Image 1 (tube, one colour):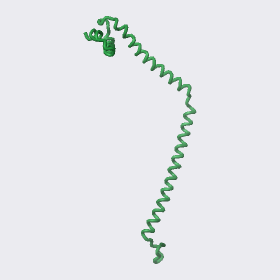
Image 2 (cartoon, helix red, strand yellow):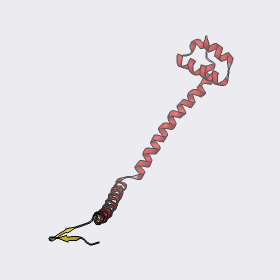
Image 3 (cartoon, one colour):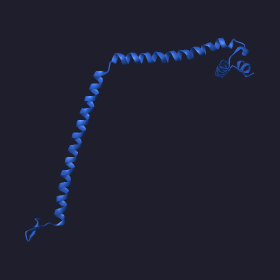
Image 4 (spheres, helix red, strand yellow):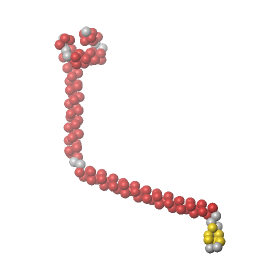
Length: 125
């Protein structure tokens, strides 16, 4: 349907107005989608550029050396804990009165794990 002309003015039906609104809304949605895609592309490009700059400044050998250093520290701490447990064998040969509180506690729990009733009785006293 075409608009109705009265005294030089155009009058549209509601259906025609709705159709025009839908067309305009579709065009606006398409433009918004295109703008979002362009923004995403530029954001991706900026992120890639930043990542490349960071990678250019990073020294992989230095990072690798730092990681190895940290791992060695962790291993030393674990080795010390293991050696403390191994020393419990020597600890059990000591007289209970000569043991420190920490040694007694470690010995007690070691005896519990091993289900060593004689050591448990000695350490409880």
